[in-house]
Amino acid sequence: MDAHSGWCEGCLRTIDEIAEWSVLDDRAKRAVWKLLPQRRLQFELSRRVLGAGEPGAEGG
Image (cartoon, rainbow, N blue to C red):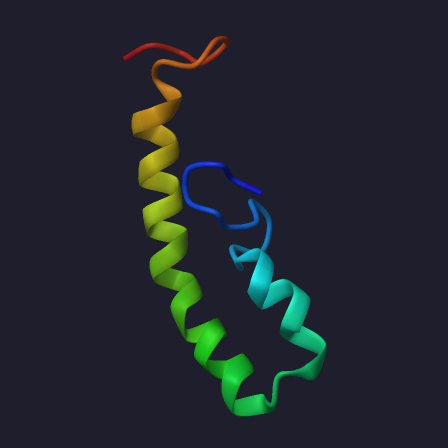
């Protein structure tokens, strides 16, 4: 889980979305899936911004 966003670094769902996934109906699952492209963009941008100051990251 990414500490900054609260999303899984692999699937970009929250811990609550992951925990509830097996009981969500198709409509609720589609609602989560619809959020993922925007989350991916936000996640990638935040990694670039935050990653610049992390040990082992290339400076820019």
